[in-house]
Image (tube, rainbow, N blue to C red):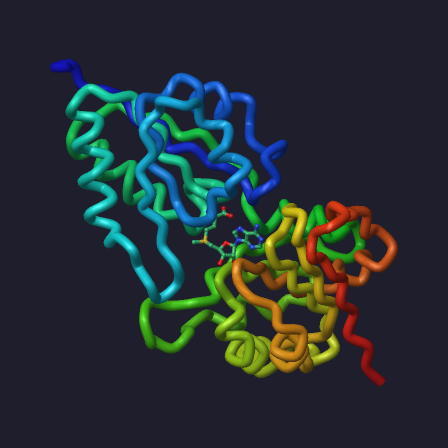
Length: 263
Ligand SMILES: C[S@@+](CC[C@H](N)C(=O)[O-])C[C@H]1O[C@@H](n2cnc3c(N)ncnc32)[C@H](O)[C@@H]1O
């Protein structure tokens, strides 16, 4: 092959294969090679036709299987070899997915690319936990926040900008830093009684939802044994979950709905 190929930066959504976009499904069927991350679910990988090459470049927090530069090099090399590459990423490629860095690497090499958005974990997990992230009279905005930093660097966020009671916060990768998140938000003026939902393995048969409050969240998460991937949703909209929780994980899965009760 001597013509340059094309790269599709495709969001796979949060896990439920039915949340894949029609465009993503079509591109999987037309790909020469699929380069995918750890958070892409087995059910979605099963949609890749037999005979299409798959390259796993997945990363676990603190355990980087492949450095980002190496991933960039792989997709550039595949495209320069003339392949039609689907770069499949969990959720949305441009939301904490480093899709922007990959797009820049492609642009630098003059490789044509397209971005196919996916449903990001924040809105998907909230929806599957019965939480509207905005709600008239309760929350007029939502903010997506990275809850971890590289290596052992402490979490440094502008807590004041996150203190507004009408702002729903959704922390990605925040489980390990829940104590810092609690301290930062409370010091900036958020009430310790602010409702919190932690949604792990969102939209999948083994989804878990923990309802708690800001002042108890780290301890309740530890007691419930909740593990990543999980989002932490903070704000008064979480109270709606008790009435709007609709998702019934599949029978046979190890799903639990944990409700922390206090006082
Ligand atoms: C590197 S970020 C990738 C986010 C992704 N690009 C997106 O738009 O959802 C990984 C984090 O996303 C969140 N996440 C992704 N999928 C999830 C799921 N199914 N349930 C809960 N959290 C999820 C977790 O906070 C996880 O640590």
